[in-house]
Image (cartoon, rainbow, N blue to C red; front, top):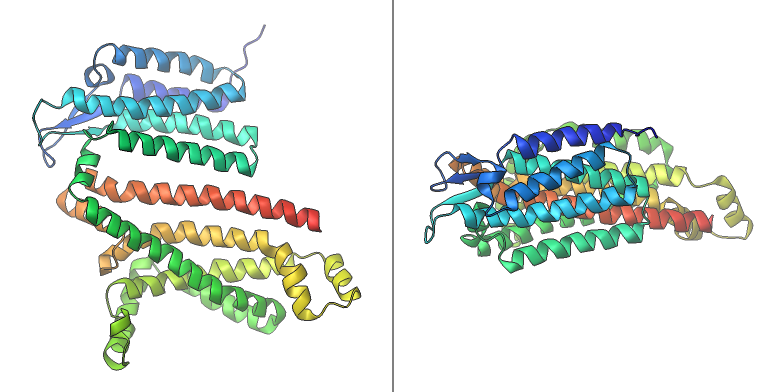
Length: 386
């Protein structure tokens, strides 16, 4: 019998071999700013957990290289990620001296590389399985629940990331709220403006090129440059327009960040609205005309429902984009997770950087999965309706 080799599996196996057997698993530091001391898997984990993890990875490498069943690969990837999450918490308790509140233990390159390899394995398995949108949402909920259990159980409390959080818990949630408001608020405003503008551009061809070209130009302006360009006009409005400063409009802070994110959001919303409406089958439109529907009735009863999956794709692009761009808002006093990122860079404290970066990535990933599923659900419904 000929053994079948999985090409992607070979790449994943190489990452696992280096991450688990060569690269350090954890970094130990006497305090938060001194250079770290690398610890291997065998040094970082208590008792026989180090050898057990290496044995598990060795078996996983064999299973990954061979063309094993897709479900087995998915279970292996998810179980390995959960095991790594638990073990890195145990390493903090093992490496930190008793009664020492200054020592810091953080995941090292081997942990991240091994976790990335198993995540790649799970993602590949999910793609091959072609799960339904509801199954993907359920899997996302299970992952969020597992992470919440680990956080609330205290398993990660010894990690330097959680120590940074513990000293900034109130500020963290305040900035989290600002980050979400910036991302979702600018998206809501862009949808309210961009959807009618996209409908107008679809109906009036002479307007389409000009509007899309202007929005394309705005999209090419670097984010920090656009934030800076908005400081002067918004500062003038705050000084000369009665009541503007009272509602939060000023040259620095959340206002220029919100306006910049709103402007960046317009192009995907408008362009996808135009594309979605242009893709409505002519037969459906002709049938609606044939039964006597008015232009307004056709728009809301036929065209927009059929174009909704494409419009929702644009909204997904905007939301993921805005969650990332909102991080830059901290540079002009807009708040958000970027506050921790830039504080960490200034203090050379990478755990503080991670405190801002990790929830940003997690939010973007979660919303991407949810909106991808919603797009597929709406697309299936549109196909049945058509």
